[in-house]
Image 1 (tube, rainbow, N blue to C red):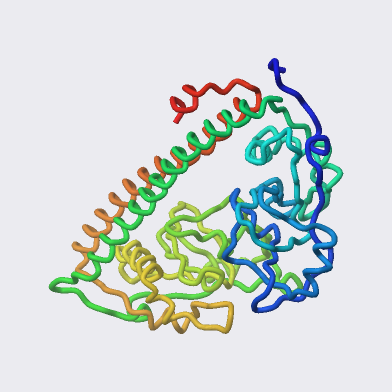
Image 2 (image 1 turned 90 degrees about the vertical axis):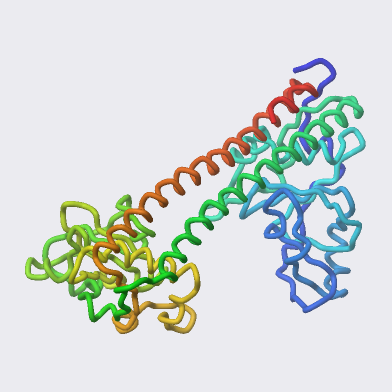
Length: 404
């Protein structure tokens, strides 16, 4: 341990570590602000999407804990281990899903906040998670977490200032990367829109049932299904432009059902439910079975397969596909709706050229997206690395600036 630093449990440096009410409150349209772990998910308190309780409940809850400015709120379940500082001098109450930490004068609240959100604290929290299904942190485990800190308050303030500056720069870099990521996808979608908006000579507009055959897969019924167990596709396996074969299940099929319920290379597969209209082409050299939640589409002219998937994608993004979906709550893209879905059909040679250009642009777009996603991941790792240095007493002013 670096000279001038101490290691203590949180209960030794906090005058209070407690949680909110264990009773589910009655909510009102207005009144006293009531926060839960849902309001602490990104390191800051969400004061917009809050719930409200009345004065009577507030009085009882304040007997247990009365949050105040500079208290630390820590999510005990859900997004466990994420903390935020109370940055508004307002009256509010908290639910049991939030722990409240009120530090003593020997530790700055801002220093404590950075520690709670650091990898060193996360590692300790993860070791203490309890419960099956939705794990949660208990107050006793939170109190036992160890924090390392400089005894000098000016040194704590120096570290906080460095972290504030470094993280502001990182957050700006992340915002730029996220904007570039959105722009890359928007550019592709804009080009896609222009392709189908500028239909030329020889283009036709046909219903799918006029130019293709389509059918649904087999219904899953363990009691009635007979035959040989076969791997099959569910709608979760059909992603945009690709199929995910990592978690295929098995269903029994009889030999005489093979032709009816298998997709061959080049067939278009479309989600009937789940994400109605999401589509991909079966690219493998072997046939694959599919269930009732998926449409198989075989065009009379296979050259239109990929163009159709691109048009479905555009129709989903611009909202036009919704006009073909039905159902109260859970939406479906039924066989009847698919049959009357109208798609543009350019001449075959032009269709091939369009698909080739879209494929090339899609590849370049994905490359850019991969670069920006990696940039975002690198920036998150950079934050962790800076925090590691900070709580080992290794952070220098120049280092933080250079790292960013």
